[in-house]
Image (cartoon, rainbow, N blue to C red; front, side, top):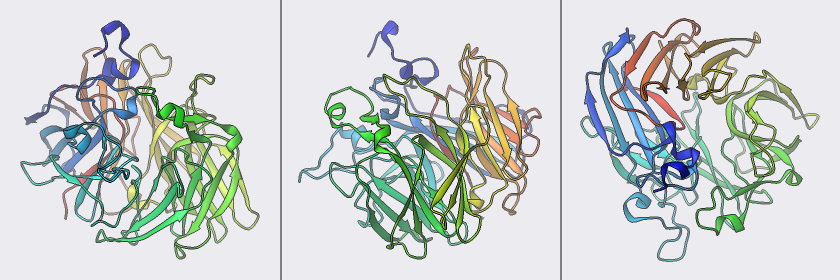
Length: 448
C-alpha cells in the first residue's frame, strides 16, 4: 500500500476505500422520510480490497444500500461484488485463451431488469446480486443471459418504458467487431445481438435510446495497446482528435439495418441525460459534454450540459451549450427514458477549496430554466437518483443522493423534493459509516 505522502488522489480523502462490510439497523434521521418511499437506494462504486489500484475506475466494486420503509430508514448494507477477479485474482483470458468476461470489478452501476439486480462494469459480464431479505446485495454470480451474451455489457443500459425492453451494447477487444448492440425483452431474454461497424476500439461509455432509435457515440478516445501492456499504467485510452467524432443512428424497428453516421465536433461524453424523437427526421440528445478527454498534454476541463439536434433529412447535427455550470451524472425520471422528458438533473460535486460548492441542479428542458440545491461548504453530493411519488411519469418525486461531509468524514443519504429543489432537504439519513465517492445507482422500489 502506498505511504500517506505518496497516496494518489483516487485513493485519498473520501476516494479512499472502506475496509469492511457492515449491516446496521434503525438509522437516525433528521427531517421526515416520505412514507411513499418503500424500497432500497443503491449505489455502486470502486472500493479496492487491498486499498491499491492504478486508477479510480479499476477498484473492486462495492454496493452501498439504504432501506426506506414506512417513513423509517430501517437498515444500511455495504457489500463487495465478489467477482472472479475479487475471489481468484486478476485474469484476462480463460483456460482456452479466450477473453474471460467473468473477470470483472463490477464497480460502475447497479440496475434491475426482469427481476434480477445486476452490478455492471463495461468491460465484462454483469454480476447478479441477491435481493432476498437477509441476503441483500450478496453476490450470486456472473450473468450472461443464459449463455447468449458473448461480449461485455455497458454499465449504462436503457429500459424502454413502453416495451420494457433492455437496450445495451458491448465494446472493446483487439479485433473487430469493436461494438455490438444488444436487446433483451421484458422477460430478460436476449433477442438481438448485432455488430456495429466502427473503425477502432474507442471508449464508448454510454449511448442514447428514443422511442424509434438507438444512437451510438463514436468519439476520439482510442484504445492504446502500449499503455494497456504496462502494469499499473492506468486507463489504456488516449485522446486522438484526428480520429473524428460522430453519432450513429439505428432504427429500433430495423435492428439489423444500416447505421447512419453523422459527424460532430471532436469532444468526449461519459454520460447522456436523455434523448427523444422530435419528429420523423429529428432526434434531440442531451449530454454532459467535455471539450476533450484529459491527457498529460491536456488538463482536465469540466463537462457542461449540451443539446445535440440531429436532422436526419439534412444529415446534420446542431450543437448547443445549454448551461456553463460544470456538471456530471445527468439523470431524468427513468419512466420517461427515450421520451420528451421535461426535467433532467445533474450534479456539481465541488471539492474542498473549490470556489464552486457542491450542488444538484434540475433543468426545465422545455422552459430553459434551472433550480439548484446548493450544499454547505465541505458537503459533496454524488449522483442523484429520481424516486417517483406516484405513478405519473414526469410527476412529483424526490432526488436521493449520498453526501460526504469533509468536516466530520461522515456520509448521509439526503432526500430532496424535486419540485422544490432549493428548499432544505426533506430528510437526511445519517449513515453508520463513510461512503466513498462512487459512480451510479438507482432507487429500487419494492415490487407492487
